[in-house]
Length: 396
Image: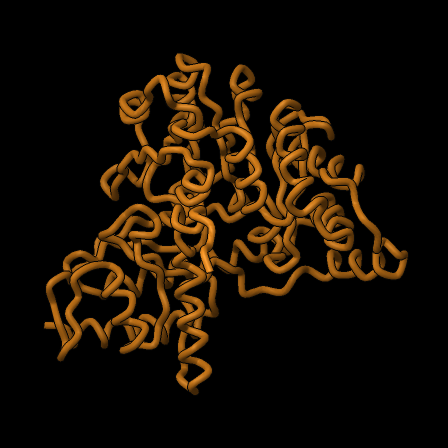
């Protein structure tokens, strides 16, 4: 059987692969502590669940408009005005089965074969693979711990060519935890003003999980707003990963293009999820803020524990729920037949020896780093880092 060459263009997400390996060990009776997946360990807030139950009882069980119910698109506009000071109309909004589909719609709508897409490293694993699916060319801007994992205007300018069509980034960033402030975004905006052919994809899915202050969006620059595709969703801030609801806010040309693409892939998102999403976006945000308070405490504990691990160089995350240390000091070390030659070896060693799952940095464009989540209980975080310390101490 011959399969499509499309499958050779992109890779399986390493985040999902590591979670799968962890589940396989767990099925054998091994106590694996999961620090790999980016999923809040909280349940969906009660008022959102009640809205979904009401939607079921009210028989919201039929096909939905591709871009989403009118009240949901209006709710997205309300949220963007309330939280971000951004004015959008329902025709600017397209809701999807998760922010991942929103990203895919946007990339497929904007990128042709050979078009260049600039992505600062580290980046979420799916960004580069979506560009490859669209036959675009990924252009990486390498950042580092030294510059807080943020791209500079000089780096951005140097990366732009006549073939550049899209710049894609996240703030707060998965996996680094970097958060761009208003001044940093303003400096990048100055560069974008000189290159009107570039559309900016701004992934703001971790908006509410911010440890350093107010969330800022590059869409707040009025003269750039029509060139921004703002991407967000409910998975992280509302603990609704399994509900699958993401959305874009964009100019009507891009919104209609995304709606056209989605119409041939999935049509609309779940009707029940959409009704629950209205309650999430317009309702009480206290449960979301309480989750962020918990992540703040876990972040502090994780940073405290990670400082006891020799050889790690670690940026203190400003948002999201990950640490992304440089672990290259362990390359070349070994324990028995296990030799650590790269980040993949490092992650597999921890999985098989410490029984702690993580994600190698190669997947995020940073081969010297490994991502560890702190979206787990305080007890499990403490147990995991004790195991990690013991396993690394055995390396020579």
